[in-house]
Structures are given as C-alpha cells and as structure tokens.
Length: 502
Image (cartoon, helix red, strand yellow):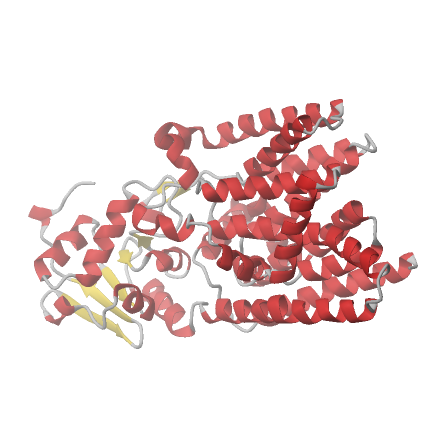
C-alpha cells in the first residue's frame, strides 16, 4: 500500500473519530461533570495571572488546590484565541481523537502489518469507556492517555535509535506535569523488565537506565508537587481523599462483563488471547511490553489503586493494540485455509459494529444526556446576579463546581476532594440538609457552614430520593426566592448560639 494512501486513510479515520465526538459534544452547550468547570476556572485564572490558582477561595469555603499544571496551561493557551467554552468542547476531543495516530504507530510496530495497524487505529476511535470519560468533559485523560502511549512508543523506538531518547524524555516530562497516573506507566516498565529477566530475554542497558531514571524523576517531581498532601494524607492520597460513602463509585471492583462492554468484545478477546499466546507459546519482546502494561492495570484495578473507569480506558487501549498482532495472525492463518479473507474481514467488521460502535454511540448519547441543563445553569446564574458576593450556597457534590464557576459563590462541597478538610463529614451534613424532616437539624447544619442558599435541583431529588425539602414550609425561616424546576431557598434563621466551629 502506498504511503500517500496510508496517510489519507489514517487522516480519514482521525476525521471520522473527531466528527463523531464533536457531533455529540456540540449537542449541548454545557458539560457533563462539574470537574470541567474547575478546569475552566484554572485556565481562565492562568490567562489572567500567568500562574495556576493555588488557593481556591470558593471551593469548600477556601482550600489549597495544588496539582500538576500542564493541562491548565494548554487550555489557557488556546483560550488566548478562542472562548473558553469552545476550547473545552474542541481541544480535549482533538487530543482524544489523536489517539488513532499513536495506536497506528504502536500497532505497526508490534504487527509489522499496515492493514492490521490501520484497522486497529479505526477500532481505537470507538472504545466505549474512553468516550465516556472524555467526550463531553474537559477531562485530563483526553491528553494523559494519548501522551502515555506516545511516550511508550518513544520508549520502544529508543531501543532501536538513541535519537528517540530525547523525544521520550520530553514526552515523559510532559506526562509527569499532566497527571500522577504516570505511576501506572512506571509500574508497567518495571514489570516488563522483571518478566524479561524471568524469561531470560535480552535486556538492553538503555532500557534499564531509562526506567530507573523515569522512576526517580517521577518520585521527585510528584513529591515536589504533592509534598503537603503526602504529609497530610499519607498513603490515603492514592484515593484522593474521596469520602468512603462514594469511594466505591470511583474505585469499584473489577467486573469481567462490565470490562468487555466498556472495552469492546473484539479487542478484549483478541487482546487476552495474545497475552495468553505470549505466556505459553510465542516469545516477543514488544508483545511482552504491552502484556506487562495490561497486567499492571489488572493488578492496580484488583488492588483498587486506580479508578475503575481510568483503568479500563488504559486496559482497553492496550488490548486494542494487541489486537493488531491477533489480526496479523488471523489472516496469516486464513491464507493457509479455504476460508475467504474477505468473509473473515466482514465478519470482524460486523462484530465490531455490534460490540463496539453501537455501544460507543449509546455511551456518547447517555453522557450527553447527563450534561447540565439550561434550567440548572439559569438557577446558578440567578445566584450570581441576585445574591451577596460573600454568600455560601449548598447543592449536591456534582453541582459544587457550578456554584463556583457559574454562580461565583462559595460552596460547601464539590467533587475535587484533594486538600478538602472534613470532606466525608461535609458529605454527610449535606445529605442531612436535604433529607432531614426536622427544621432544627437543618438550621443547625446550615448555620454550621454559614449557608445562605439551598439549591434543590432534579439531581438533588434523584440523589436523595426526595421531592421537596419538608422543613421549608416554615416561611419565617425559609424563603423561596427562585421557583422553577430548580428551586432556590434562602435561609433566614440564624442560631448563632449553636454554630459549630470547623
């Protein structure tokens, strides 16, 4: 196949993937997670001040917000030319869609087959779990995941050509400054070296030196960034200070059926087969590297040291890449039999459509349906325009970012738990405010956080299984100030004598 034809096909795959993403993303003006609005605030802050926002005076009433800043700067750079909401819709989807180029390079490296690499690149654009976490969210992982596999590509190429070491170091540095999930990459490299040693395969000096350097650089860089969190949280920083009542939503148990649906039937089965084939039959160093990556993800998921959706996204891409090797073996075998190569190809495409493309569209549609609505945004805009600047507003944990970004007011809790003091107690107190039947209990907890306004949205009704706030019938203490589908109540009674210092 001619190189210009290959480039044309590859660009076409990228455009199909990107257009599909943008089609769903632009069906709504808003995002599906409140974390997106925290990232927007960081980008806008950098645009205005050139440095990240290290102290957030609105989140949790005021707290530190130390994190790896590279992604904030990327968003801020594009914000110089484009409105931030357009940046949030466009740039993350471009990064995520660019994965098809990286998967093509890695698949070609492992399979040495153009056709297998191109088909695998196409499959990588329709991994349901990856779409779920990136399609309508300004997710860090829209950059982290492609960057991780680009770094892995440079690692592989550096064994053949030392000039690639510079590219590896630059991409690894960018990865360290983007997200702490870089630890997964290091675990995979270390497991790869260990398994290579067990298998008595040749380990180059460059592989050992790069891995050791990467390990110590990562430890040093992350300690510099998160040293206060390490000192305060200790090993608990792994679970990001997430309150125990919702910890299982982030670090859930690994479920085989859920993994197959999230990744896609074809890449899952073919990828697992190649790992099995390597372990018991064929010996291939590049297959071993990806098998080590997959085993590392399995291990961290089993130990609940990585968020389930993030782990499945990494695992899905690894298995997709391993599928390219299966594709090559399948058609090599087909050529030796009477089976029609075209028939086998069309069967694969049919299964792929049923088990990957249709679930991808369904996941995308569901993610868009979870986006914030005009009614919700209008309620928070009302808060911005009609309440004192120093007001504290209570809403669900998933609406905390809207209080900060849209309403520009202090919240009680949001989904950014790291460095948040008493996050679990706050979560319980917010639940009590929404579910208690006793007015005295409600006022006690409203005073505890100096809350002036309560937002009752459909999200709160669904989360707490309520239709209304029973105690707000007392108009001497509670005033309905915004009455649409989303309701806002003003808390009037102030019992200073029972206010608890936190």
